[in-house]
Length: 185
Image (cartoon, rainbow, N blue to C red):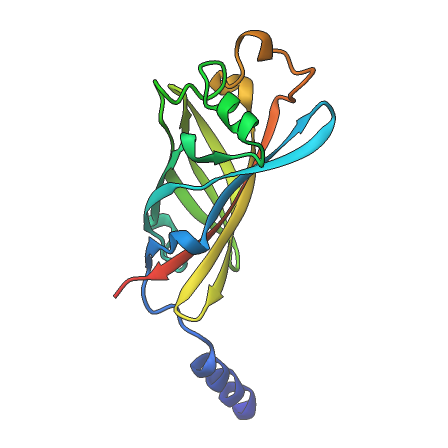
């Protein structure tokens, strides 16, 4: 019994501790991407520019907050022609709506290093609640936050007019993110 307690105490002392909440994001080591089906073929893209405000404490998830703003004109689909089309009025309409945003409402622990995030996603003047799983991977004093969720492009009027049907571009868009979060001082 005493040996077991000693081993447990030694393990806890040697385990990496999360000393401070994450208060910023290393943007160059982070990504926000998406996947979609076009004529039955999977395609991927990403956004090259976004900003964030975070205060994420893995131990006190219920007190944590996050806000992201994505510059929609920074879209990279792998095709300059597609990039020009997707910023047009029919798609993102970046002239009227230059940014998309996500603001968390609730973050709760569901399992060790696993969380459920509830928040509001706003794109093109439309706001919807989204809920998704978030995984936390400690990396020394910093951490990697990863997750994904599916949005319906019709919910945000992404693809209007001749693009409103889903025969060419599917309604489901998978959003994927990998955020390198930095501990505060």
